[in-house]
Amino acid sequence: MHKNSKKGKKLINNLLNFFGIHKKLLENVFTPSSAANLNYIKRTNLEKNIDKNIKQTGKQLILYGHSGGGKTTLIREALKRQKRKFIITGCLSSETLEDLIVKAFDKLNPYYVNNTSEKNSIKISSHLKSSYSGIESTLKGEVSVESNKQYQRVLPIQLTYEKLAEFLGAIDCVWVIDDFHKVKDSEKKKLAEVMKAFVDISNDYPKVKIIALGAVNSPRDIVDHTTDINQRLAEVHVPLLSSEEIKSILINGSRLLNIHLSKTLINSTVKHSNSLGSICHSLAYNYCHFSKIDKTCHIKNKILDSVFKESIKEYLNDKSDTYKKQYDKALKSRGNSYENVKLILAAFLALNEDNVTHNEILSKIQEEEENYPQGNCTSYLQKLCSSKFDEILRYDDNSGKYSFSNPFFKAYCSMKLDENSINEAKKVSDVFEMVINELIKHKKTPYDE
Ligand SMILES: Nc1ncnc2c1ncn2[C@@H]1O[C@H](COP(=O)(O)OP(=O)(O)O)[C@@H](O)[C@H]1O
Ligand SMILES: [Mg+2]
Image 1: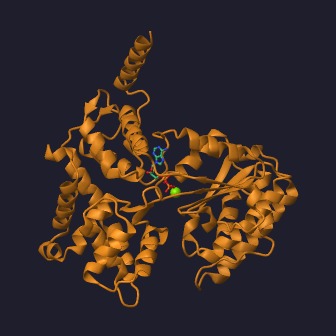
Image 2: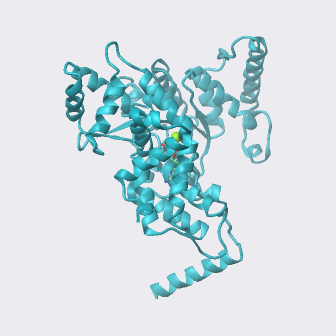
């Protein structure tokens, strides 16, 4: 019976695909640079925990964990699931908390000024509306005065944290602050104060709250635990996607596009993704692109394993500027007497292992630099794991070992640090070829079968 119903479902799906019903576009299925939507993989325990905290009145929330772990995706899905209204404010390193407040204020314009469609249904007191307009015109005034100088908006005195909480509260809206790790530490300290204003206002407006997302090791890096917000603050750690979850992205995506990926191709993609959803989405996108598939196929289309190599090349091509910038930025940061980053990365690569300990790296460096201080090794390893250094390395608490977050970047570093190969490489394409060779040296891939 069960088998029959499964068969029936498959048949219906085949028919729907054949007639082009429920057709999906490739760019909506594999989403390397945005939150997953159509091809969202459930993470049940995390979802339960997040949902519980969203439901609790007055509870503020922090989601933290490695970049690419799926924080933005999870929170968007959770708010959608709970039919919550929300605005998302992304952060730039140059921004202050005041800038973020102004950005959030601007996003409320459709509710308070341009009474568009569904937004009409919300009753906002005329007092609050006129208060919004008043602040808006003050802000506009400042923009025109400042337009010749460096552009910076000053928070009008009427636009306090409490006021923003009230504007959001009156329309039952959640404020999501994304990538909060990017702002300066001094700004981070102020967040607890703003959250406090949101806790207070939740007595009148139960649905309002702040959800802050950040790529940090500890929520303490976002909100100082000495503040009295603690009781009203929940922290949820978002781990990187597991191999099973990465595999599900590929399998679910294949179903949506009516394609077939071989086991070898799936396993290689999982390995090369190293728990980063964006690599998995990128590679899968490229597989389809090179197989000339841009939407759900009428008849199941088998992707050839041979697309793997060109897909990797394309991925590296897309990333070449990013990697160069990350590499140069990391190497520029050197101490007084030692090129710390260079020494650490070179030692790591010379060890020729996926995971290494602090002591192994230190000993390797000391083979050449006898007096290299342990303290330097410790502090630079820590830096290389931080978002300031683009999380080049990852630290695993359980094993006490470090690894490269991104295997492609690892190969890139190994190529850059090998001076002989740099001299040999004449063109960018040669460099990529070398990176690929570096990758296949260590991993079993579809193209060496
Ligand atoms: N649950 C999920 N299902 C499918 N893809 C996901 C999921 N979570 C994350 N991704 C994908 O992984 C990448 C990183 O996700 P994102 O939410 O931006 O992470 P973060 O905000 O933690 O940096 C994106 O390409 C996204 O589409
Ligand atoms: Mg994010």
